[in-house]
Image 1 (cartoon, rainbow, N blue to C red):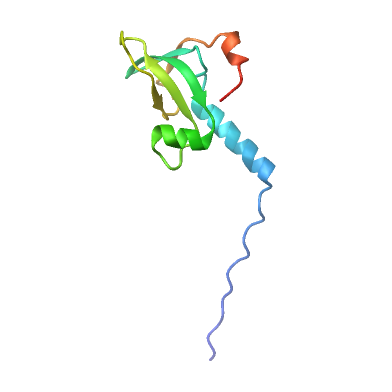
Image 2 (tube, rainbow, N blue to C red):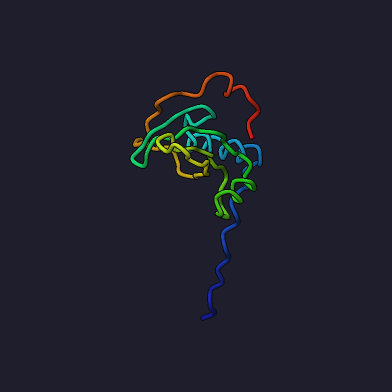
Length: 112
């Protein structure tokens, strides 16, 4: 009896780039949450003012030292008198609390 031959299933149909890009953009925005320049948020680590949101993946990877980073948030600890800005890539969760939303002037600025 001859051995039966199996053939791999054909690859799934490719998703158009525009659809994939939009889905990724939505995920990124959900992960960033309401953190826009000027906002202050608080969590178990402290309270932080958002100085900038970096949505350029290459720049975010440089800032965070992660090969897969898609975005970064540059923040300053508001409880530290001489707190230096630093970048984070942690997603917005239910343990984060918005203390002060970003003002309209910051929201209309060009996104980085």
